Image (tube, rainbow, N blue to C red; front, side):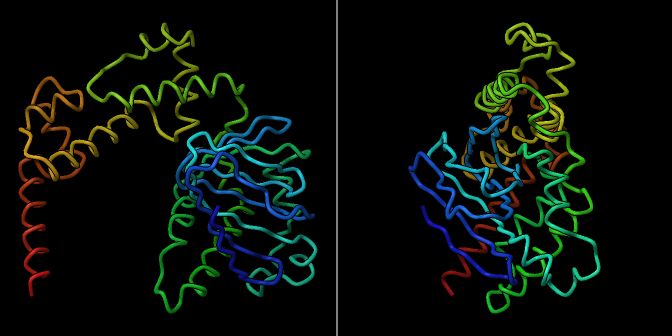
Length: 291
């Protein structure tokens, strides 16, 4: 496991975590404090009093002494870990947080009540902060991360992360069924299944299925799969010479005209216009490389 630690403030440390072909995520030194894990890619499972599963875009916040090793189903994992020393944070908080009322105890009460860790699906604002931690001008990256982590703590203290329904409010077995449905739908985009068909095949009430899918993945089934279809279509248009009709079939559209209308609604360009734009950008890139 590769872990790069960055001390941001007294009692606040940010770590970049990346594993490749490993089965477990080690908890690190076990001491009193608070830990936040954000999953950027891959998956992680903690066997706690309530099983906690993280998919990309999910986060976990709890006491560090409650966490052991996490299993990594896919072997590869990438994410961020934020460690907070409660005593230091309350005794010597970063200046912008002075007088704000934000405490480690308050964060635990909101995100790990009664010592029961839970996973949350990050809202867009939080997700954008996590995803931006790798960005920022190289010369000012430490300053950039300090600003972003302060913003993150303020949003967490304000309850921005808890507006999404907790993934652990549903039984782990049901959450696993939702993940199986997701993998099936995204693994074969040419297939179209109705909610009723999925409900019969996976023995789950249609209303529960739709509600749980939105809880786990943040959007409706239709919107989520449409996003995967459009992204796959865009990749095929940019990287292959496949006909637009064949691409439409590959991503689940029997009608090329319906596919073109859906693609334009998503990207603002017809498929042929998108392909032409990608080709012109590639030509310009090649030309600049030769200069």
